[in-house]
Image (cartoon, rainbow, N blue to C red; front, side):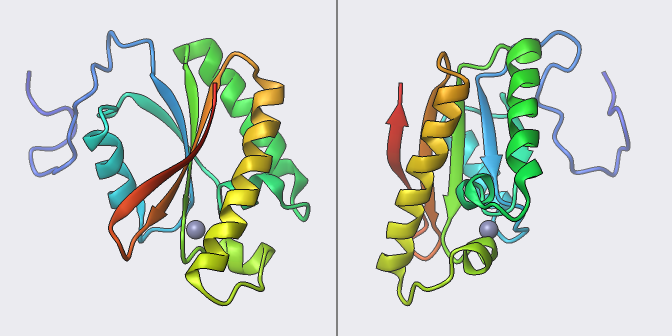
Length: 159
Ligand SMILES: [Zn+2]
């Protein structure tokens, strides 16, 4: 089969778009363009390849918990519901990252990376519990991307 879009396109067409119906996970990532390639690489390296739905929400956990835009949280739940119905997902992955502009906006006050990580831990726990309460059959996995160390820390799993 030839390229679907353009022979000049570098886009990979890995997923079976005609026959695939199940996605393994529902990934929530920040909108920050600096981390998108790392996030996709990370998911690929951890066996997900392109087998997940993706939802982009500024700040991920803090985006769910902040109260200035309550519709963000509702819209996330609407999308998880659709993902469950259409793609039979097993888990939600919340992938926070450090140096996040949304955290500086909605939860300012940390002065170093340890404090920043602590705030992420608290916000991830709150967000994960909310999702678990709404969707008790879904596993919720929380991670923090540390770009300086070039690693991703798994911080919480609700089974
Ligand atoms: Zn961010």
